Amino acid sequence: MGKVVLVTGASSGIGEATARLFASYGYDVVIHYFKNQEKAMNLSNELKECYHCRTFCVQGDVALEEDVKSVVESVIREFGRIDVLVNNAGIAIDSDFSMKTVEDFKRVIDVNLIGAFLTSKYVSKYMKEREYGSIVNVGSTNGIDSYYPYSMDYDASKAGVHVLTKNLAVELGPKIRVNAVAPGWVKTPMNLELDSSYLMEEEEKIVLGRFAEPDEIAKVIYFLASDDASYVNGSIIVVDGGRK
Image (cartoon, rainbow, N blue to C red; front, side, top):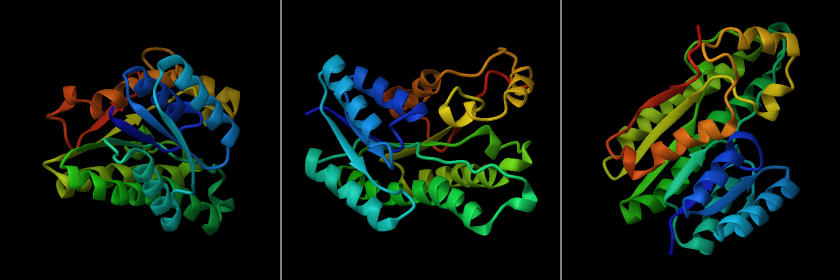
């Protein structure tokens, strides 16, 4: 039986690229989604056809503990193991500070930060039993240098993900490694919905002169999860093209 990776928020963007990359390296892939069942199923079928791997689609809200518990238990019933967890599920609700609501702010924190905490909590239980595993959290450069007040809730959530990563690395070591990737601008559906003039301004601040492709972030996630990074633990790897 091959290794199993669970990718949260895998139906699009970085999560989709990550699922595809792990499949290409022979992993069986769990495609978690919240709303877009059709895209998740299409990805599942594609991976089976292209890479002849086993796939499993599972729905749930990572912000809800019972959903997360159910998701993880269903994966264990299906595959019996989870070797790699990629905490990728995330949302942004950008708005002017004066217009932000407590409900929206909490929702961003709940999905981006609490979701990573809950999924790590329930997956690591099974990793501990096998004394093996790797967790990769998807943070953001926004969690390091905040420069867009409209997304202060998103920035706060990603800063929390980075701190969570370092604490989990201590808590779960030495058998389970925990790291994070902190992407800068990436060509994801969420980012490309922003104002085009703002995106052009941001692109000019990048030394490489462009936004990252999702698969470029996926490659760093795969490296952190792999045995090639066997001595990397508690690290936050910035992948931003060299922001000026």
